[in-house]
Image (cartoon, rainbow, N blue to C red; front, side, top):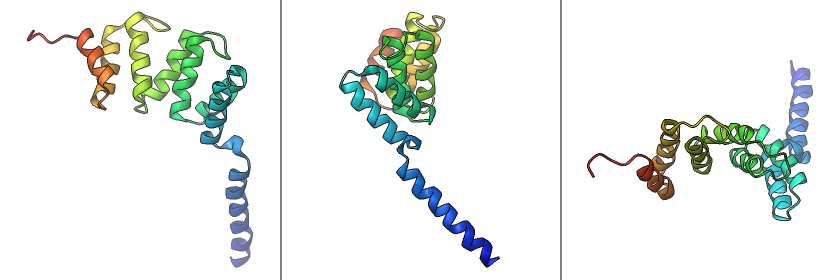
Length: 146
Protein backbone atom coordinates (compact mmCIF):
# COMPACT_ATOMS: atom_id res chain seq x y z
CA UNK A 1 0.00 0.00 0.00
CA UNK A 2 2.84 2.43 0.77
CA UNK A 3 4.29 1.83 -2.70
CA UNK A 4 0.93 2.72 -4.21
CA UNK A 5 0.84 5.99 -2.26
CA UNK A 6 4.40 6.74 -3.30
CA UNK A 7 3.32 6.48 -6.91
CA UNK A 8 -0.10 8.15 -6.67
CA UNK A 9 0.86 11.21 -4.59
CA UNK A 10 3.54 12.45 -7.04
CA UNK A 11 1.17 11.89 -9.96
CA UNK A 12 -1.52 13.98 -8.29
CA UNK A 13 1.05 16.68 -7.51
CA UNK A 14 2.24 16.71 -11.12
CA UNK A 15 -1.33 17.04 -12.35
CA UNK A 16 -1.96 19.96 -10.00
CA UNK A 17 1.27 21.68 -11.03
CA UNK A 18 0.59 20.94 -14.68
CA UNK A 19 -2.73 22.73 -14.42
CA UNK A 20 -0.98 25.94 -13.46
CA UNK A 21 1.76 25.53 -16.08
CA UNK A 22 -0.74 24.98 -18.88
CA UNK A 23 -2.94 28.06 -18.73
CA UNK A 24 -5.08 26.91 -21.65
CA UNK A 25 -6.79 24.75 -19.03
CA UNK A 26 -7.48 27.78 -16.83
CA UNK A 27 -10.74 29.56 -17.63
CA UNK A 28 -9.78 32.79 -15.84
CA UNK A 29 -6.50 32.97 -17.73
CA UNK A 30 -8.19 32.33 -21.07
CA UNK A 31 -10.83 34.94 -20.34
CA UNK A 32 -8.29 37.57 -19.34
CA UNK A 33 -6.11 36.92 -22.39
CA UNK A 34 -9.22 37.04 -24.57
CA UNK A 35 -10.24 40.37 -23.08
CA UNK A 36 -6.73 41.71 -23.68
CA UNK A 37 -7.12 40.85 -27.37
CA UNK A 38 -10.64 42.30 -27.33
CA UNK A 39 -9.29 45.60 -25.96
CA UNK A 40 -6.72 45.58 -28.78
CA UNK A 41 -9.61 45.01 -31.23
CA UNK A 42 -8.13 41.67 -32.30
CA UNK A 43 -11.56 40.09 -32.19
CA UNK A 44 -10.67 36.81 -33.91
CA UNK A 45 -8.08 35.92 -31.24
CA UNK A 46 -10.34 37.30 -28.53
CA UNK A 47 -13.25 35.13 -29.66
CA UNK A 48 -11.12 32.00 -29.65
CA UNK A 49 -9.90 32.51 -26.08
CA UNK A 50 -13.18 33.81 -24.72
CA UNK A 51 -15.01 30.84 -26.24
CA UNK A 52 -12.49 28.47 -24.65
CA UNK A 53 -13.18 30.09 -21.26
CA UNK A 54 -16.93 30.04 -21.88
CA UNK A 55 -16.82 26.33 -22.65
CA UNK A 56 -14.95 25.89 -19.38
CA UNK A 57 -17.93 27.48 -17.60
CA UNK A 58 -16.55 31.00 -17.06
CA UNK A 59 -19.66 33.11 -16.41
CA UNK A 60 -18.34 36.43 -17.71
CA UNK A 61 -16.83 34.73 -20.75
CA UNK A 62 -20.21 33.22 -21.57
CA UNK A 63 -21.86 36.65 -21.49
CA UNK A 64 -19.04 38.27 -23.46
CA UNK A 65 -19.15 35.52 -26.07
CA UNK A 66 -22.86 36.26 -26.38
CA UNK A 67 -22.00 39.90 -27.03
CA UNK A 68 -19.47 38.88 -29.66
CA UNK A 69 -22.05 36.71 -31.45
CA UNK A 70 -24.63 39.49 -31.14
CA UNK A 71 -22.32 42.09 -32.68
CA UNK A 72 -20.41 39.76 -35.02
CA UNK A 73 -17.04 40.51 -33.41
CA UNK A 74 -14.49 37.82 -34.26
CA UNK A 75 -17.30 35.42 -35.10
CA UNK A 76 -20.11 35.47 -37.61
CA UNK A 77 -23.09 37.39 -36.25
CA UNK A 78 -25.53 34.81 -34.89
CA UNK A 79 -28.33 36.03 -32.64
CA UNK A 80 -29.42 32.50 -31.74
CA UNK A 81 -25.89 31.72 -30.52
CA UNK A 82 -25.83 35.01 -28.63
CA UNK A 83 -29.02 33.99 -26.82
CA UNK A 84 -27.59 30.55 -25.99
CA UNK A 85 -24.48 32.04 -24.40
CA UNK A 86 -26.42 34.76 -22.59
CA UNK A 87 -28.68 32.06 -21.15
CA UNK A 88 -25.75 29.95 -19.92
CA UNK A 89 -24.41 32.96 -18.05
CA UNK A 90 -27.83 34.24 -16.94
CA UNK A 91 -28.66 30.87 -15.39
CA UNK A 92 -25.58 31.33 -13.21
CA UNK A 93 -26.93 34.70 -11.99
CA UNK A 94 -24.86 37.03 -14.17
CA UNK A 95 -26.88 40.26 -14.08
CA UNK A 96 -25.50 41.56 -17.39
CA UNK A 97 -26.42 38.32 -19.15
CA UNK A 98 -29.89 38.38 -17.59
CA UNK A 99 -30.46 41.89 -18.94
CA UNK A 100 -29.04 40.97 -22.36
CA UNK A 101 -31.24 37.89 -22.58
CA UNK A 102 -34.30 39.89 -21.47
CA UNK A 103 -33.64 42.41 -24.25
CA UNK A 104 -33.49 39.60 -26.80
CA UNK A 105 -36.82 38.20 -25.60
CA UNK A 106 -38.35 41.68 -25.58
CA UNK A 107 -37.30 42.31 -29.20
CA UNK A 108 -37.57 38.73 -30.47
CA UNK A 109 -33.92 38.67 -31.53
CA UNK A 110 -32.43 35.18 -31.75
CA UNK A 111 -35.39 33.86 -29.79
CA UNK A 112 -39.11 34.01 -30.24
CA UNK A 113 -40.49 37.27 -28.86
CA UNK A 114 -41.73 36.55 -25.34
CA UNK A 115 -42.46 39.42 -22.97
CA UNK A 116 -43.06 36.97 -20.12
CA UNK A 117 -39.50 35.66 -20.49
CA UNK A 118 -38.18 39.22 -20.74
CA UNK A 119 -39.91 40.06 -17.46
CA UNK A 120 -38.61 36.86 -15.86
CA UNK A 121 -34.97 37.69 -16.64
CA UNK A 122 -35.35 41.35 -15.70
CA UNK A 123 -36.81 40.28 -12.35
CA UNK A 124 -33.84 37.99 -11.75
CA UNK A 125 -31.49 40.92 -12.38
CA UNK A 126 -33.62 43.33 -10.34
CA UNK A 127 -33.63 40.89 -7.40
CA UNK A 128 -29.85 41.24 -7.38
CA UNK A 129 -30.21 45.00 -7.02
CA UNK A 130 -29.61 46.13 -10.59
CA UNK A 131 -31.19 49.57 -11.07
CA UNK A 132 -31.30 49.34 -14.86
CA UNK A 133 -33.25 46.08 -14.59
CA UNK A 134 -35.62 47.65 -12.05
CA UNK A 135 -36.33 50.58 -14.38
CA UNK A 136 -36.73 48.34 -17.43
CA UNK A 137 -39.06 46.10 -15.48
CA UNK A 138 -41.25 49.04 -14.49
CA UNK A 139 -41.51 50.08 -18.15
CA UNK A 140 -42.26 46.55 -19.32
CA UNK A 141 -44.60 45.50 -16.54
CA UNK A 142 -46.12 48.62 -14.95
CA UNK A 143 -48.03 48.09 -11.73
CA UNK A 144 -51.80 48.26 -11.80
CA UNK A 145 -51.85 50.72 -8.91
CA UNK A 146 -50.96 53.64 -11.20
